Image (tube, rainbow, N blue to C red; front, top):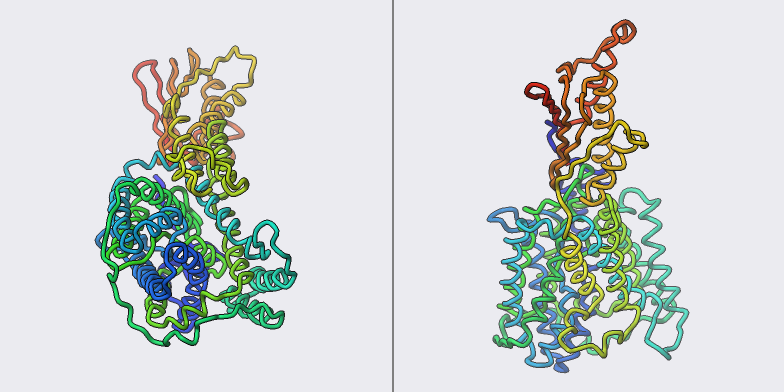
Length: 573
């Protein structure tokens, strides 16, 4: 029986358990923090929808930074069943935008805190349940959600990258110049750079972007910056706590979307840190979701907005080649420290739009590709094709056709609030519906009088089941080769007096084949024959076949009573 071991990918410079030098650690932490600060623009835009008070807005930004820092540090932990143990920073999640906007307009920060308490509790429950319902999150669903996260980031980034201000807005070529200069300055060291140039590709891009923005004259005016203090101690739990049952459903839907996005993000973290990755480690995911739930309970206690995993930062870790979990602590420390320096935060939030768009697009590329890689790690049949195609088309329609669902009933609005939310809901529902009629055990009788070649029959049978089950293609091909080789050995030696029957059973971890027939048993000889034996002994070829089959399978067992012969092959999946 083979033993599974993780393998550090060749493109990773500092892996999970490795500690970069202190100077590298600080610069990389600052680079990740810069990327996360870009997301604060969306938080600031959301706050402006329900609060015109500058003091309240500054307070919420401070609380967002504090909770983001706490949530990020929690992901480092691997004790008390808390923390994924991966470099997966926590940010103010876009999944909550519509629900938070409604709560802010209705009851302000106090109502947001109350609703986030329900979210935190809901996420803690889901964290415990998810390992038991892993069948609801097959690789095609997880990969689809990771891809959808990347596509949503593209939707947000391209408006800033191109300077799009809506229908009728004016075109400014300087915005495109700054955006291309920023993106190009990040791509070049990422592809051709070595050493520090690759490690700090995003910082290099930011510097070039700011210089270009200054030269072209599109640096934003930072009004009110002079009135902000350099140092200010945040006052926690300032606005109290409220609750509205009418908002519970929208918040729980947003939380479910955020959790499933996090499942995809944690799966991506696992995949980029292990060349031998096969499937999602649900125990690690459960710990990561627990840390995220605790983070949202902290939000409900002291203030802020909903927290979720940062897909952009995962993409940045791939590009820099550093996935060390110790960076979570550095990033968290930076975020918490910034809560005490409002003037510095204001400078970050005032980042020129094309620079921000270039950063988000840069990170989104890696999320899209990571999602597609997870999708392609399994065989796909018609069921899974429709799950992916319909879900992704539905989600894209939200962003591609504004107002598409404006005439629909009010109760449906929480489900179509964003492309990611609709993609998530459709993927889960279709996965449940299309699972009807599928079985994890199947039988097939190979008839010698069939017009088809027996080998073609076996491969066709295995490929069909592999697509239905969503199995790894390399395992299905290996198992089909072994079964075909064994069938030829049995028939060439004229051991069977009846048709050979294949019985396959599958779960996410195992593929088992039971080959049954009436007749003489196969000799239990798994020894490799010598060259001389192959030339002089007619039975040596059968011995060679059994030797190869035994090498292909993780376990092989031959038994039977009387003329009832059974050969069992086990493959780890």
